[in-house]
Amino acid sequence: MPTQVFGKNLSEGWLIWHASDVSRLQVLQEFGGIYLDRDVYVIKPFNEFLKYEMTIDFESQNTLGSQVLIGHKNARFLRLCYETFRDYDPTKWYVNIGERPVLNVINKQPHIIYRMDGQFGVRPNVCHMLYPKYDKNWRNSYPKPPAFSAYNETTVWTVDTTFSYMLSKTPGV
Image 1: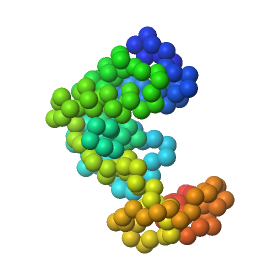
Image 2: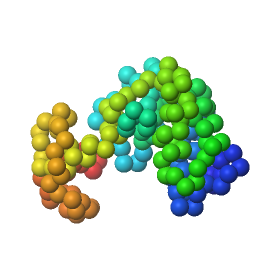
Image 3: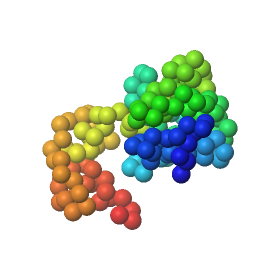
Image 4: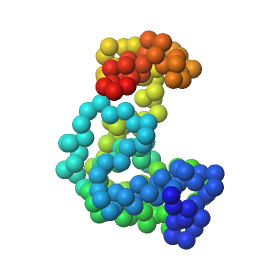
């Protein structure tokens, strides 16, 4: 796990997250591929995005979602995004990976990425589709207020929610 980027110490308070940001960029630059945060639930193949040099989802106009990154080895965005860490700010959680690369790279060279606008689930409202009472049309649901808020490894199996259904229908779970 990296503890520095460009000679600057990564924040102790944000170390795991900032080290992950740096690592995912380094690994994707070297090998290419698909990066997924450990809490990403994939419901359809990513094959259609492999033809693009870099595919990124956005939380808002000027904030990208780094939870799902699909890129070719040596994609231009990966190198340029990594370079923005020269201005690393250890006091901010998401500015370094989520905002600065948009302002300094994507807004200046939008052609180097394929832009998604929430389709990978990085929009904050996706949770409201998962936790209300089960909806058989969950893939096409609109946000609803959450019906249950105390999930753990026991209660997740006892409530009638879309999230519980998704888990129960997942092979191997």
